[in-house]
Length: 375
Image (cartoon, rainbow, N blue to C red):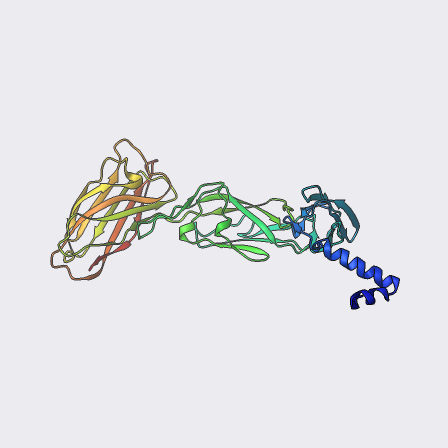
């Protein structure tokens, strides 16, 4: 008899059964010691009192979900999928514990914090004041304040719509800023903080003149929308102006265009101005052509009234007018003197007269200047 056989014969019965059970376990293969538990995205804040929790675990596993006010148990389906509602305590932060247990006794646990919030945030436009009158189409500030004090949930979305257009400004580089027609969402202009949005209206974002109404809407991360808020104020028109687009040309350059733009809050049927220049820099004006918003106009005569001064006219024989807004109207084609010295040189538009479709006129505008650079 071997030593092992002798040892087994002398073991107590309980110990012998333990040896035999261990031997059976070892021969049955590896034990199941893992369990899958994956949750679909769960909102951290919701206005639903019974949001759904879904995901995947082992097929047939038992799921138990506990909240401060409820416990629910369900079985996963044959694919391990599950989806069921859980009840939250209203308007507070809820600790949600999800436990999955498979047939082998393996357990997985997920803990979540879910805020229930069904209170609307508040919103109020504070600037310009109700019924205020601005001092121009730009140079003022729009402020929209909002809060969600009931729950402290951060702002999720902001929409601010004007019933007037914004932007479309023409500048001395010849570029026109983006134009946003009435009804566009202006919130991208706003610098947003935790409790307010601020929009400093500069020249490139000029509002159209006239009575203006802003309508603001916000919602919080729980999905609660604020009651829309409207604020009315009046945007006063900027004085009309001509814009001389900066240009560049080498000594002796011919057919160099200098573009002139118009910015006006009212319709314009005719334009007159004197172009003033240094004759040591600009040898002559060769021609004047219509462009941009004046492309349909049929006449732009000019004549030299004195040395270094050329009077330019713009009108349309059919009686058409330029619509309110901003943009290029004329190209003045010049020749630069062969002996022109390098550097920036000023071109001036003065004695400006604008005619309106009713036969009236505005005179004495200007001077307006731009830069001609000779490299």
